[in-house]
Length: 159
Length: 159
DNA sequence: TATTGTTATACTCTATAACTATA
DNA sequence: TATAGTTATAGAGTATAACAATA
Image 1 (spheres, rainbow over the protein chains, first blue to last red):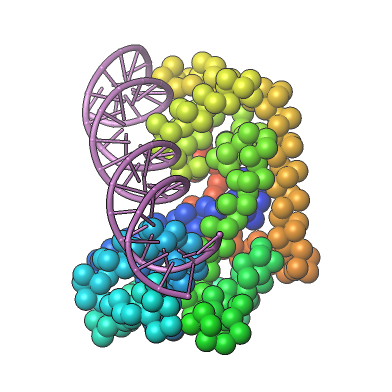
Image 2 (tube, protein in one colour; image 1 turned 120 degrees about the vertical axis):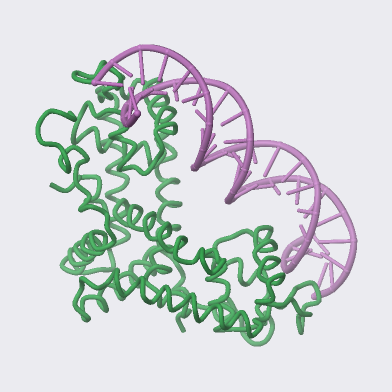
């Protein structure tokens, strides 16, 4: 009794993602975080001091939007803008201790959410699911989802 | 070298869907269709004469938005509003021949797109991928993605 | 000449409320 | 009293252009 509409993987993913983002937004709200800000903190955890445009790109937001996202987190003492070591036009965004702490809380929330989501799958099925998603993402042209500065950079030029 | 951000299934699906919807929108544009209108035609192909609110729900749009979507397709001679057989408040939306024809074209475009997308997977992997997506969707509370009128209806009451 | 961050403006999209005709 | 469709209005979100500083 499945709707033919959802025989299409694209539609199925669309519907699922719509719901997931909705739910994720609700779960993050008590922490005062938007999903994009979670993504931002996550990027910084992995590589502190990225410039705003380096954060904007993987998050699929325009640089004009990034300004407000950073403003918000900075005013709350979660991140800090510092002088960029090699490009004086850019602002290096650095995590502050409160930011790391809040991220840990947010990630715990997300982990619990994902555990529920994948709870119906056997452990190896969940693993396969993740791997297939990765492979399809690559096939879709999502550049292997690697660091911006690991893609084209040769040395410290873009860092 | 994967970003930790995308170790999270929710983020991975979000990123993938963002790109997929973008691409799908581009592919449909030459046909003058928005993804939602494609979804609408798809629902009608399967069950002609649904009321506007029955189309709105599975497409995750508000009934005020549905008005414009139907208006557009009706003005182009793709669908038609008729009197609803059992509820005089409602409008039954019916496909016209041109609508069926355009849908066939759109579905061909989507099929090609999906073939490319899943081209890197072996046939059985693609099948598993679809099944896992379905199961996760169900776990996420997406009500098995069945027809609105097959969920709670007992007879012709809501038809 | 191009790019980073910033601001302001315009545009799109969506959510809300209100109305009518029905149920 | 509640619901289907419609409309109008307001709010959120986004895109565009322009600017100063720097590459």
